[in-house]
Amino acid sequence: MGESRILASGQLSRPLLISGAQAIRSMALFAFLGLLVTVCSATSGTVRGLVVGVDGSLTGVEGFTVLVEGEEMTFLPVEDGEYAFPLPHLREHQRAGEPVVVGWESRNDVMYALSLEDG
Image 1 (cartoon, rainbow, N blue to C red):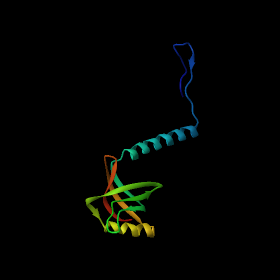
Image 2: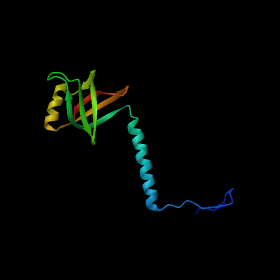
Image 3: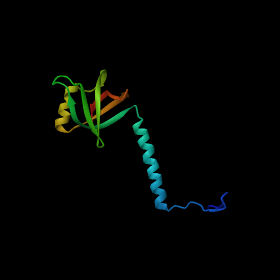
Image 4: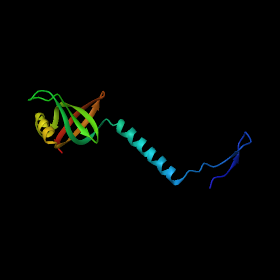
């Protein structure tokens, strides 16, 4: 396996040995950290989740919040968004607990809903 070597200090080095369980935990940690970096740095994407909040009047929506895998994501609508239904219909999704699919883009730390459809 690994070879022992004599270091400049005169000490004998030993190869680093880890158990199979330690190796699996290390690989899982590195995979999780890689996923975390990818998710945190994403500037656009598509998510599916439940509407948990709608901001605005009965006839207009200024923003809405979707619960995605335990995390709340708040979106602002865009003027030329590709929406499958009028934005006030989000309140019905919220009441009924029906999911939506949001295509989004982040600009200056603000998430904009580019598309929206029934989930």
